[in-house]
Amino acid sequence: MAILRRSFVAALLLGCSFVRGDTTPKPVAARMRADLTFLASDACEGRGPGTAGIDKAADYIAAALRTAGLHGAMPDGSFFQPFIVRGSPSLEPGAEVSLTGPGDDVKRLALKDDFQIIGLSGSGTATAPVVFAGYGITCPEPSYDDYHGIDVSGKVVLLIRRAPRYGDKDHPFADDQTMQQHAALQTKIANAAKHKAAAVLLVNDASEKDDPLMEFGYASGAAGSIPAAQIKRTFADALLKSTVGKSLAEIEQAIAKDLTPAGAALRGCTATVSATVERKKIPVKNVVGVLDGVGPLADETVVIGAHYDHLGYGGTGSGSLAAGTKAIHHGADDNGSGTTTIIELARRFGGDKSRVGRRLVFIAFSGEEMGLLGSKHYVDHPLYPLDSTVAMVNLDMVGRLAPDPNTGKGKLEVGGTGSAKQFDALIDRLNGTAGFEVKKNKAGVGPSDHTSFYLKGVPVFFLFTGLHRQYHKPTDTVDLINFQGMEQIADLAETLVRHLSTDTPRPEYVKGQGSLFTGGRMSVPRLGFMPGNYDDDADGVLIGSVTKGGPADKGGVKDNDRIIAVAGEPIKNMTTYMLAMGKQKKNQPCEITVVRDGKQLKLTVTPE
Ligand SMILES: [Zn+2]
Ligand SMILES: [Zn+2]
Image (cartoon, rainbow, N blue to C red):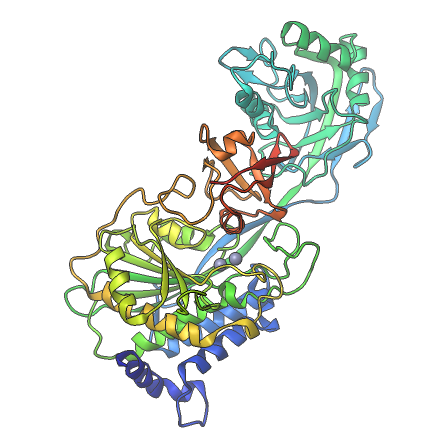
């Protein structure tokens, strides 16, 4: 009842701003409905970074926080913490590859028929002599170096795709993984740049029937520093025959035979490679509002967060699970629900004028769907010191509270219970009154923004009502939201935040609670690997290292593979990976798609 009375007071204080001319304050669930209805409306365009709609949502949230009595967290009093995200690469018009010689004839190749720019290409134009550098591989142990004895500095390097004896057990590398690593396009282009090449021309190895050109978007990842294009083998063949007197196929066979690199300057040949690859800079912003601390704990901080961005209009690379659809992804549950709940919490705490305790920092994050980018930005540029940030509470998808079939109580997942010594007992105690069917998860990392804080040493809580069929589809709409449930969750979160902002001593951080992939008691079925990178800007999840004997290893997944689909669902980043894995069953085989050396492979794995 205390909670109800407090919110009643808060509503009374602020009531007129919610319903103009209406003297009775709206019940909590109704005002939450009003917020969520706006955030999930067509006007907000699915809150996709780069849309006008997401800015409308940001303005709405900032206004609601201000009305609730919060002030902006930026030094100038603004509620907006701006940062930049990168869109996926696009090839601008004007790409060119021209080959000259030997002799004077200039041959200008045709885009898509004769050449294609590689998605990993940098931007720029290079005109320089051509040096053939075999497979473009430099492997220290055992030693194999295509750059041995040749100088490619300032030159255009001509490279063969993959590796010598590719797919053959008797290859020149320590193991298959090392071979894959060296065969990867990214490694090759980076190695060429390391040898100061001005540009890369790549040709298929002989294993590719009909010599197809890769689509521009086929290989994606961090942009390279030099222009890189693939050309048809016939052009490379002509250059090689007229300079070193051998065909490309003959050279490949010779390298395969005795593993002697065959690098050579192609006398009299020059090439121009020109590409402009744009990765659009998209300005986005976190919305950050503050209630100052009062009393002896005033200099310490509790963060209450929820991402407000979503997938916009969907489409390839957005993280949408509605393949081929271009439509507003309303994101009512994901994460209009969490955003609405932190607004509600801001109203309650903002309306409590006798509050004593730590500073409360409310953050609506942007860029979450692109890989937790807003929370990453905040922890890298915190507005209040992280070492005195005692806890972070994250709400992501709290709009679908449903009864447990056995107990009839609302099922609520609570993550991070192992991230501080006190948290397990605390949530048990609070839930004693709240009465949820709580599914606890110790892990401090997971598929949402609390991960960024946990990895910086801040104890976290994560509230979540579970996945559903409308997840990441345009049909995640307001009519499917359980507002009474959201109110109950707001009540629990309020009590939780009240404890976190007043309890002494502060929560004691516990390290190593649930690496995503090896982690303690994650409820999500796992494949057994460490991610290679938390936040690169390519789609998919890069495998850093596969756990020996784990499900991924058994299924043939290799280090440096990039998982781009799980059971047919596209994987955009760690978040979508975790959510897709959450739908798989332990000990039941499922198909995943990985990209290895620019090629897609389907593998069957059995999660544990
Ligand atoms: Zn979300
Ligand atoms: Zn999402």
